[in-house]
Image (cartoon, helix red, strand yellow):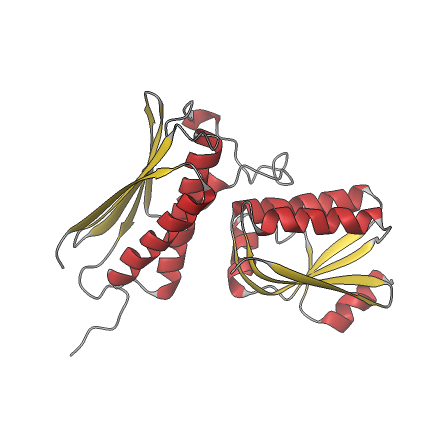
Length: 147
Length: 115
């Protein structure tokens, strides 16, 4: 499998969220991951994009979301960044703790971590970059090997 | 596919059949309006049928939690019916599976309100 990289710079809108979700799904499917894995990646990317346009850029038309997705033989590496005020990783509350269980928000990063193999959050100046990594087993990962 | 909904009354229980996606800005806002409307009309027994919900994101989950707490705080009950595997898994990993009263049979769900 050859490496492939896609980079998109998009407005801070829900249409952009839908667009990166579609793009991630397309590239994940091409990587030979099974349907469940593709859906997990799709969902993780959607959560990251919602964080970027909504919590990060606050739908500001002057601020962009940048999405990149690179497929190598070993992994899918996705980054989503915004130009907002920045996210302090240490201050992200645990949505599973009893006091947070019935809160209406705060589950996005948790779901991303649940669905991806590695997640890194980096503060930018300004903004936040989140990197999502899914390991793949090379050509035809998730599919039966031909004999 | 955005969210669609229809409402029916069975034995004093308001059943809301939802289909499509419950996500930020689409289904989640609609779900909030539906629940507010029901509370305003005095409906206190609400069963959300999620059998045809194809996708739900963290905003959608948050909206379900808000609906649950809003109805409960108003002295009512909100239960979930017919979870797909995807929604079931999401509620399980977010530990909400034990918070919601979840049913997989409509008749039994309706009966459970009348106990």
